[in-house]
Length: 123
Length: 279
Image (cartoon, rainbow over all chains, first blue to last red; front, side, top):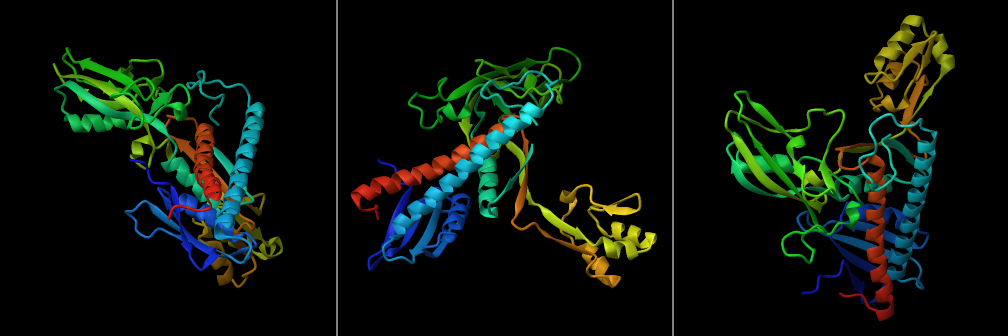
């Protein structure tokens, strides 16, 4: 049996600008972050999410675009893109700052690093 | 480890925090085969205690297969690490069985060995002639399935407070009143140094607003204002269980969120071609 897709769309048959997206195995972690990114989008007319039932691993994401040229699906794509960019930025800033912090640190006195996976020391 | 995050919103900060706690993979003992257990603890209790011992995986945990999805039968080196525990008390005195007695059968992982815990983590005590003999299999998992896989003991963030003191009004207070003002804060945000009120660490503030209430009572409501810094800045504090290093957790959590997003993006891109999302 094929696993269900992680996201499905419930479109508005009359209007491509409106849609509800159903995310499986997602919760407030993604819902709230994505909601925040899309609410800042100038062409978002409405954006909100809900978890219809706590024992169902489903997240409903409602999106309405204010631009007739922009479908809800494309708007979601733009929101996802901007969230990706933001995380990418946090990631690179964190890595940069960590390297800077470690360079400024006097040589470690404790036992050698236990994990060989990454050259990271405890703060 | 502490770090600060700014230029974003609580929803992003909260996503980071939630992923650190519940969706950052680590390795923990998941299957235990008990061969002999004459200890005071029953098998279930013993297995539970073994599961909670932080396991340090040497290598990238993310590269490890999930035991459930691995194509092997049972378990293999690509999805698990095996441990062995065999302790028998032949002496008169009670002995302690600790995480140091847990022996890894491969060099890919070890139970947490930290200089702050020279005796290791206590698993059980054994009386005269009591014995524990078992093998344990550690697998990859995430904190939302069972807290034993959570790499953090605490992962929290705090809004940076913005506290403004009106020094002109403060100077009008008597030294005793200044002392009373400093004493009004239950979190001890203020201190007096050389007769001046100073704030040694703004993050001590817990927004009780007791200082503002005190100022209002003495008829000087402009003495102090406490609010959240605008735009917000968050201070994260990440404390690990020892299975991963704090910076590794933050990096792993960022990868996890990015993977989540990529999954959706892939779906959006492929669906674009088909012009139809599954309904």
